[in-house]
Image (cartoon, rainbow over all chains, first blue to last red; front, side):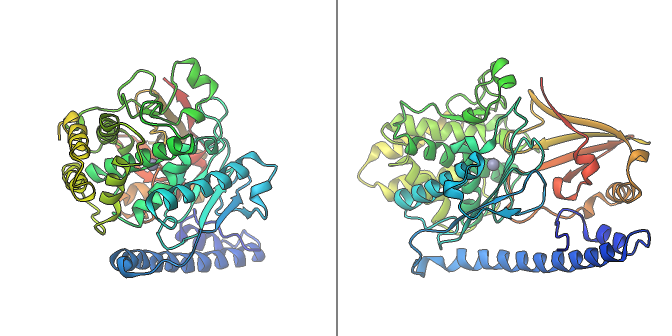
Length: 343
Length: 91
Ligand SMILES: [Zn+2]
């Protein structure tokens, strides 16, 4: 079986494949890897084109798949993707596999029942997760086609699959990729991150049937390790109070405090606070009205990769009128949210 | 010019902020010949670093400093010896 790691650049692989100090077998495998990498790249380019076409034309298509497939892979502490397929993840004795699988299925259900969305791309795309990525890897991510979860170092963070909001956050990056297609820097980057926090938090609230008052609005509470908790950090971010001392990653609270080049995990603070404020101003369940307005603004207009926060705010204000023409309180809540952060 | 200072930033937790850091340091000469060449290439043409995948989010990137020059490279383009050199700490 040839090595098919996609992390090593092709020119390095090519150079190694010509290195006479390596065995003929290994050199042959390296040549094979370059070929596979090339094919994968082609596949990715095709996938990107498909993303654009489906985003542009999806409105008229009929959705046939009932529920998307959910799959799980085990990276076995390497950084090779996707890793080894897990045949029966639902009943796996491996907690990470089981959590990633079950929670991903629930996120699918959340998007289906609450937003009538069929999976990440709204066309039944398979939801794929790889767990045990790397050694004590302190991260979870969306790589453009699947979710990836590290085990955490056991000190600052525990296993990233322990956060249902983290799983909802990562999957929502896929939804954004297949709708608004937001960039990952500037205003659009902050919005991209905020949308993942908003829907990750909403999923966590929906799972526990919490209304906006009962919800804690924390992101990453369930992945904090003992060393972080000991220092008083109870979460990564707090949507209700982005600059709070208990946040491991405290954020700005006003749009005017966002600076050029800021990491999107920090510039997401103001729009997170806008969403929280809108939800709590209106009351009830976050996903019932304000969540619908945000979802409509995310998925109802095709791609706008460089969308500004101001434009997104205007779209949600308009969306409140469009979706709930007879409910002035929805518009008022959305308006109060954006005004709170200076937009 | 042999020392490389490395800082890993980003990720879903927002490494590089006030409390969460990931840093490392190593000597270029300690790397394998292939990795040394890869690093030289990154510094020579930092704009030619392979772009992140479309739609990708929450991936780490690495700020690598040599002398007065600092480049930022997405994780997928960073040699594993550099990736493994960092240690995550709370501040
Ligand atoms: Zn994210």
